[in-house]
Amino acid sequence: MVLPPYRYDFLQLLGLLWLLFWGYWLIAARSAKRTVRGPAWAGWIALRLVLAVVIVALQRARLLHGLVSAAPGPVAEALGVALCAAGMGVAVWARRHLGRNWGTPMSAKMEPVLVTSGPYAWVRHPIYAGLLLALAGSALVLGPVWLAPAVLLIAGAYFLYAARAEEALLARQLPEAYPRYRARTRLLIPFVL
Image 1 (cartoon, rainbow, N blue to C red):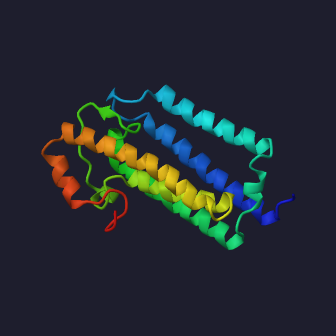
Image 2: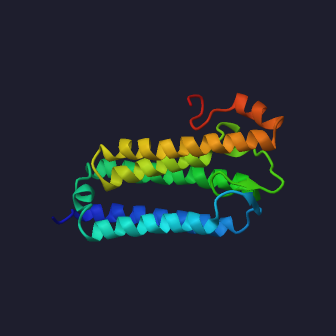
Image 3: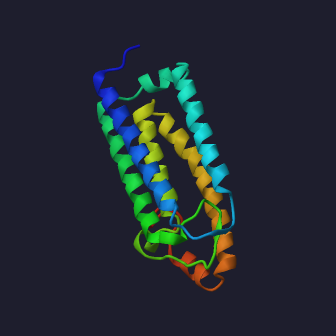
């Protein structure tokens, strides 16, 4: 099946957004404080590389071809690219406010600092919120309409697990400040959740 020409434009734009996002993420990670406890960088990177290789291999074997060719149309795809870019923008904004305090999920940093500025003034996990939005937007571009809710469900379950683990760690590291911060902010979505 031949894809309409606009599909290639949206797919290339989506790929470029993710390439720029992960390039920034890896470069910015070099300035983070030393991790005291948590997942090793090698494992974190290896997991994502394996996932990328599996997705590319499945696509090359045409096992995902039906998903990519069954996208809902140019309006939904444009909306998907916009949601992806907005989600990445939120995640990068949050990452910049964390500065050297950023780390791989569920990791403890030396001399932890509670960041409450920028998007952290509204939600406790804006990076996860931004990534959920970016993944949902990507799913709108890549596949049929059912793919976005499926991606949100799977990624949302992981992010909720990681958020809860990080919150338990922060409550132990910052026993006075973190409970107060937690009481006045939402988990992922301002004013909602």
